[in-house]
Image (cartoon, rainbow, N blue to C red; front, side):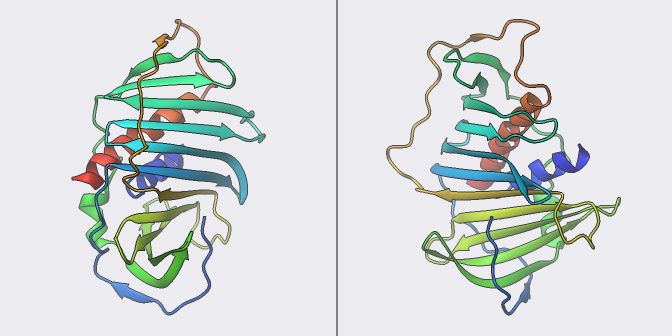
Length: 241
């Protein structure tokens, strides 16, 4: 679970791509990325190379997000569809075919200090420029960063920054229990697109009610969805400043 938490944090700090070998260059820092207010995104989560969850969503400023997450059949993770909205600090969900939205609570509190360690640690991390890559027809530069932890686990982050306008168009985050592992324990892949599209908007669910006490979405999944929303929100504040 600690590795999952770390992965969510690193993943959210940047907005599945396999690239051929290329000349690699060590750089001192990532280029400054372009701030944005609106965008669409899609993502996939894999476990030991097998997809276990997919999703898509929209961003309408740092405090308005709408995402749909579908988990696939996997051990201890039944197939479910969760839709979640963050609207001005309030977190809402609905499940599967149920049209009823529930108020899950507020996301007003900041993340723990160590949950989003980018500002303090990024300048000291090794950053490698892998080379030029097209992401959905957009020319980008591919950078890779390694996060090494005291327990021996490693998270690698591959971020693809646009050459024309430096938006983060895609990123992939791999978590390894051991740095010598060739297959990632967990892998997240995100793609961002339609930056500043005028038709993007997030609305508060009109029929939302407090969730009845004792009822909740799939054990564990609710916490992970909320954690992801939490960290996306704080990451967007970080990225849009």
